[in-house]
Every structure is written in structure tokens, then in C-alpha cells.
Amino acid sequence: RKERTHRLCTRGGMLESFLQEPERLTDDDVMLLLKLIFHRQDTQELLKKLLEREKPETP
Image (cartoon, rainbow, N blue to C red):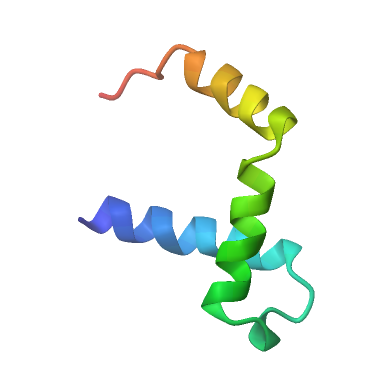
């Protein structure tokens, strides 16, 4: 659970770093942006490529 919380906070921060004035956007605004971005063909191709990589070993 701690790992998931850390990942969510880290990635949420990454997302906000790309948004102009994130405090002015609603959750629905951000969801709309993400839907548009992730429905793009080039985004889908990159995501597929990234997911096909070998998973790093965990100790």
C-alpha cells in the first residue's frame, strides 16, 4: 500500500508539472485531457512499446 501511495503521489506530481495553472482545472478537465492524449495513435504505439519491455527484477 505504501508503494502504491508513493507511486500515485509521484505520478500525480509529474502530471501537474505539465499542466498550466493546474489549480484552475477540475478533475473532469484533467480526465478529458488524459482521454484525448491516450486515444492518440502515437501514444498508443509508445505505450505498447513501453509495456513490451522486459520487467525489471525486484529483490
